[in-house]
Amino acid sequence: MAQISASIKREAYKTEIHSPSGNVLISDEPESVGGKNLGFSPSELLASSLAACTSATLRMYADRKGWDLEEVRLEISLEVNRTENRTEFHRSIELLGKLDQTQRDRLLAIAKVCPVHKILSGTIAIHTELV
Image (tube, rainbow, N blue to C red; front, side, top):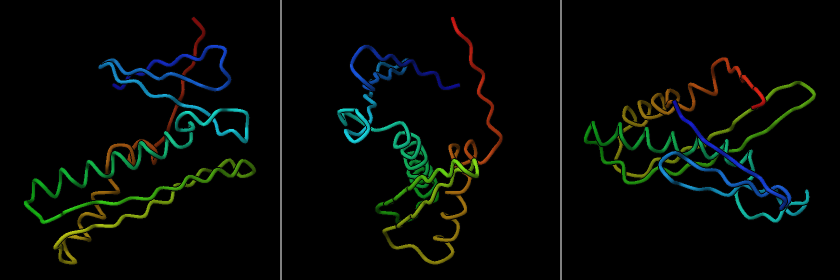
């Protein structure tokens, strides 16, 4: 289970996010909505999770198979339609290296089963409590 802690003080929208292993991220909002753009926005962090997981999953799979995958380049966009209560991710993957079409097709299938893709594609429940 992933566990993250976050805190925000008086500085508008600047949030410090901490992992148990000691990593720290700053999240903020763009200046256009009152933030100082000091870090990724929450939506950018969500899209980044899918990009990071997809990249790592493809790298691990290609390495295990001994395939000549030199680089994976990804672009993720996140669109929220509040009227329809629908969120869409658009993921574009570029695979660089000497890969045949069968390998490319397999890597596309693997991208669709990376852990974050599975989480975002499944049913999500959020339980909240005040302490």
